[in-house]
Image (tube, rainbow, N blue to C red; front, top):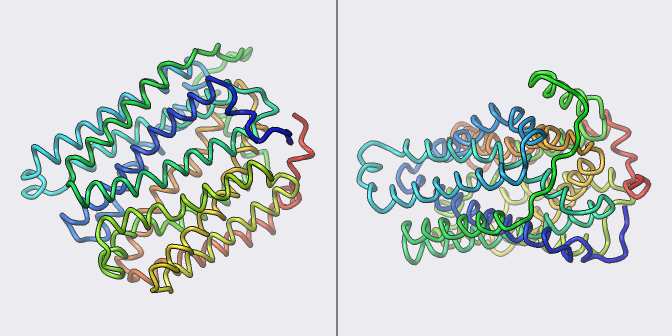
Length: 414
């Protein structure tokens, strides 16, 4: 899994366009996340209401993802990506409309219209995620999967840095309407770039299967592969229990008193660390002792979450969140590379959707868990509990998954 040129994948024109389109869309989504979180917190001042944002997106994502993976293996993947992106554009426009023209309605009846729009965006994400992953893999040769995973992760995290930071700053200085307008512009630009990428033919699938058989085949492949199953399970539980990001608005308001602008920078800290680590991994890939490195990365993430809850110096907290992003990025790159290498081309959509269910939904369910835990345990104990549970999951996976523990991706043939 080595390649002498750390920039090999992004020298491919269509893949470079793909990565930039994904960057723009992701930046818009990350902006939207921090804007929605702050808007709902200002309207409700309730931790559980923040948790319900994640639940609103997780429910449709969990319900539809498996079928979306099946669709990604039988329908042109570029087409699915473009249509899903258009739904994101619609959601951004709807949030802008509500914020600027119907704000009085939210104050009188509650924030339920926002939850409905987030629900729709969850449906779009369920189709976007497997199709985007599978389509991206079609744009590069197999020997560049590891390199592409690193650059894909880097640009995603750059978007995760800039999105919350820009969202918080625009919201804080100009208001919610201009903030949502920037989201609309970014998601529309992403749609335009995705549309410009050349179509790729669908991989040949010689097996005639019903929808149920197709989904069963994908599930069987994942659950019979100890390395894939343990890697995505590790990340799923780590993100679920370590989802402290969802309660950052409360920390920003009640603990650090830094407002929407400061919230944006706190949200950006983990992604800033991830970008640093991505660049390092592009030049020194973590594939030689990948299993060990994956376990270390998730354990380090859990420790950082505990420290975040205990510390009160804002600059040290920012650094700890930065470190959490660095540790998390190690696991992201290794897990993504494992899936890209292991997945047969004709099953890539289904396997990506299963990975999305394990990982993607855990972000939203983790947000819900964090909101509920903060509501009933208290803010600080709930975050400490989450970090401690993450460390426990690492210990369990290290014991029950020896193949993952001994994994060496440099030994995998490309």
